[in-house]
Image 1: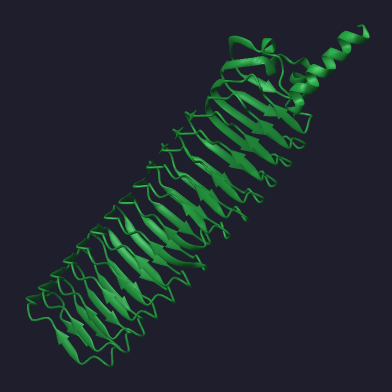
Image 2: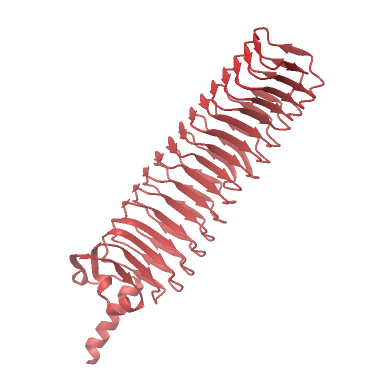
Length: 401
């Protein structure tokens, strides 16, 4: 090979690996049918870098360079898997418009990922175990028919999906030690719910348009810091669980009307405010071991098909003025500062009504209570001076004081 053609060949390969634009004539317009594996051997051969459309999957694994720009690639019908590239630092997919899935996992040196024209994924977006990933940019991604999973990304400070409006799976953020902001301002619905776990620096969860969650909402073990505010959320199809978030101060769900599962807020040491003023129904409500919680107001709650359990030592104000029926038990215990307990609309309790170890409780108002199928137990409420249930007609197993 003469010196000039050999030099041209070296320049072409260098351009593909470094992100420099290659001539448009280098791209192959015909669709490649089959699965493609891009590794050191395929890069040396060069053909796979020229495909515009792949009817199959694309696996990028073991590439030799620190930067890879796939300037030809427009569409992949199957998944794009970027796996185990120990030296790859920068991945650029500048022309990619759609793919089945984008899975970027176990890349020990990856710092940045760009797909500026990507608009649709037919399955999931998963970024997992890329410990040095600092930037992931998908500015035009509007539809993900599977889930969005951001996990074990120890260097990622912010994740923004400004165009995302539809999510067919779940939004699942976990074990991102430095993640401070996640934003999807246009997201309306997550078909399989929202889960947050072990994101101790996350102070900005920006989902202002989110109105519906299928399969529930979970905020567990430092899933979020300071405040969870979902101003448009109205329906949660499944349980809503907030547990073990020591930095969470406020939970704000002002438009939520229905939880088709249990509402559990438990062991959030600094939680001071819980706003769910529009909540009309849930299966059960459990508010327990939130040591800083002083006020609990569920103004619109009418029915519980399960139980009501409230136990928070600092609780001094408790209001559920519209609650009419609880199918299982009502258990109000260890509310050490609570002086007045009024459930003025409560008419029926399907099992027992227990008021236990509320030492400062003076007034128990159950003006509309008609039936308790099991017993009504008042235990260790030494300050109690007023009992008010004039409509009581049925007390299945008696009154215990």
